[in-house]
Image (cartoon, rainbow, N blue to C red; front, top):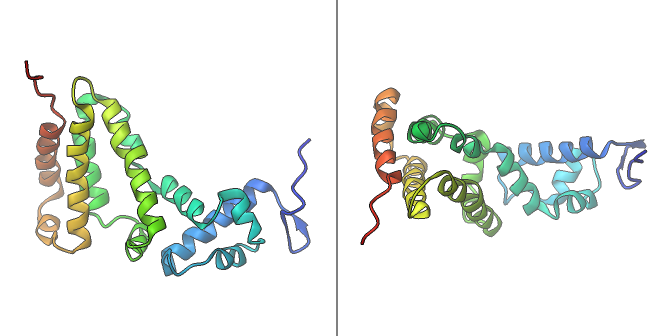
Length: 198
């Protein structure tokens, strides 16, 4: 039988390890959302969660590890790649219209305020590679899958950048069904296999 860790004690009660871990994640998500990543310390997260700060390092390595797990849990992209390859361009277009142009989650908007933070930047790079570009490339058949996946992802990132710069009001005014149709055709072109040169 597993015994709870003696370090995992709060207010005189022994805590379940998974419940404590989840409480830390929930506190970090709440604080990152309300105050921004850069403004929140590990000590503040620990106090908010009612745990010793050492548990953050134990379960997540550091504040950066917390952020990486929160971002991984928030992202829905990997599920988009799964499914019928013929409808992949439409699923990506719907993701762009409803998720990226829709403004994203409160957490995403809060993290954008800390976009220059080195931790946040490196986590986004890792996430982009491991959860977006590579899974998309792996889902494609034929030649140059990574180039084709990168083209589609660059379209998504470009639209996201325009949204952050608040330059997409004309896109927001365009009907979402029409926008999905147009983006589907563009993404189909990005993902289409070209004949290898002889």
